[in-house]
Image (cartoon, rainbow, N blue to C red):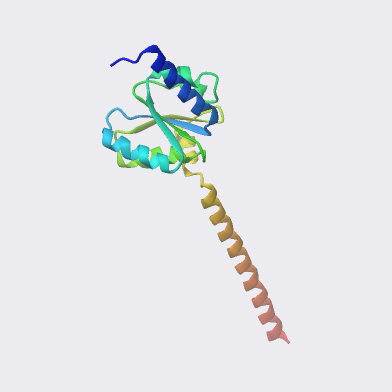
Length: 165
């Protein structure tokens, strides 16, 4: 059933509002993926603050106009499934990357971050970015290891001093 003009305006308005607050966006071709698999993906996305929509290309182009995601208009074609990262810039890319590993038919077609269209290598880098929690854990590990290293150096210096005296 075709959408009337009011419904189309509502969709464009909703996507534009999300586009103005999102940190990054990733688009993918989900044409051959089952509805059940998409629903599982959407559920996973809600848990980590990723907003997803399957939108007609013309409506999506209108929605991203005059936003930092306007660069996506160049690659929007076919069946477009868009995901916006709301909390962490790499969440949507990471989610889509993991999903595409399990579903060969699901292909990431592009992404935008800070107003720039990303290459596949850059999308992978964005997906591999640690979350805030992961970064804190790594920092604490590094600090712990450096403190342990200093302690070992101090103990070995004390041992050498005792051996020489």
